[in-house]
Length: 166
Image (cartoon, rainbow, N blue to C red):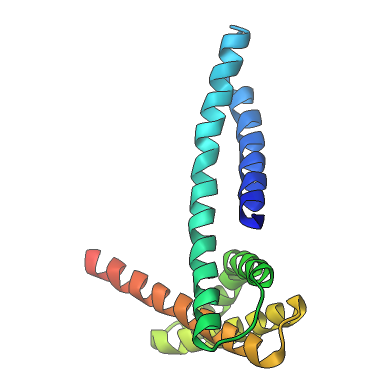
């Protein structure tokens, strides 16, 4: 149930922002008919970010759930959802800065050096997030290593697929 609430809030925020944007751009004075069209367009456009963020969230939640099942940790679903949301926020904000710093330090070196630095920072930060949520030391470290490893593998596969295309 908390995921539906999260997606509902995400959809409402996206809808509100898009509604204001479309309303500002629309210059017609048709009244109610125009307002219905603007609401419909905003609702359709709001589904896109909701779906994309939801897809990423389910991938991260699946990773945390997989690591929890493999190591038979007793972590509640509510804590896993909070950890997944925090991981997702981290991956889209701070992680980009850390990747940029790693790119600056290891510009001419192999991609392995950059990947190891990013992996270490992910493990440290994701362990801290799990500890803040209330997960004990051992499960939080295993979750961090597992999720950082899965995200790293996905990134490597994405980079390789881009190199094959280009």
